[in-house]
Length: 376
View 1: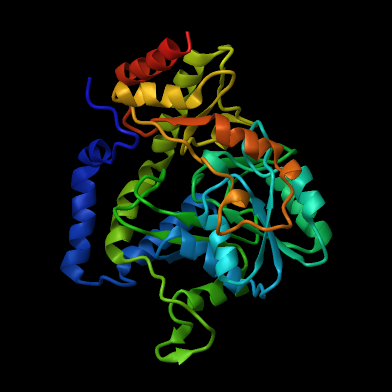
View 2 (view 1 turned 90 degrees about the horizontal axis):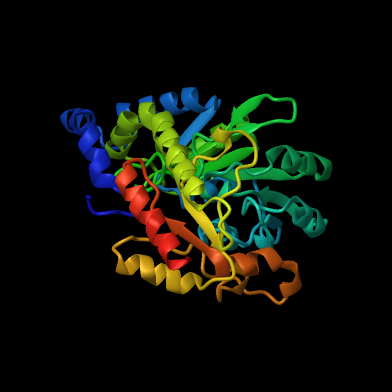
């Protein structure tokens, strides 16, 4: 059995080496390293794949979220509601822009932001909601958009972990996550479902005027060279990373399918175990693209299980060990522990197993056997 990796980028690269190398070589041959042809073609290809009217590439996923908020004109003191159980980048950019983060609890089944918690958190100062499609599963966007419409709020989807996932409306129609809100951000960090070989990100929107503003912001506020029309930043996807993404984008659906298949094998092995809650998929299979496969370990020693797996050469991780409202940087006297029962429980229970496109049946069997061996 080959060594198990949390994310096996080397094996994935080996399968697509010729295509990736040829795409990168094209950049080297043209020496168009910034805003070159590969960036423009990737932008168009991703727009077509997602059904997004506008894709604005940028330097990374954190920048993407910050630039989306800048483009929407949010002002210092405006309140932005987001999930307490997620990676810090989501709340980090809110604080950087001197907006007021309002962290709320999540749903126990999906780990996504709780609709009821959003309702309770809305005040006259609320200007935006940032739902996170956590671990690859679509948040309840129909309910979120209805709330936003009712209260005249912006919705910015944090789609760093769920690119390619579908959201199914009550009427059965489907749309890709990331094209539902007023804007969305994504990350092309190497371990993502669609990852480059460095940093990269993008903003999505269907709003023509907003797209124009965003294109200026990512490039120092310029639409014409040396004419600075808006306050901007330097955040561009470089051509080499776009070349890698162009090579991988046609494989995104197959990559997501491989992740879904692995998740189904994991869940079948753990079915009905009294100490394991497997991921709950709300909606169709394609609503969850399993950026992470995350168990809840109940009435058992999660940390000891983690060490058991590590001792057997099985990488695993806790995403996330500390609730954001308890992080030193984001602690606030406004928060009441009674408002975060789910998040406070999840941080004690969650454990993510290896998840990537190259896992084989022998590795999956070894991983699941090792978990069950500890929990027997």
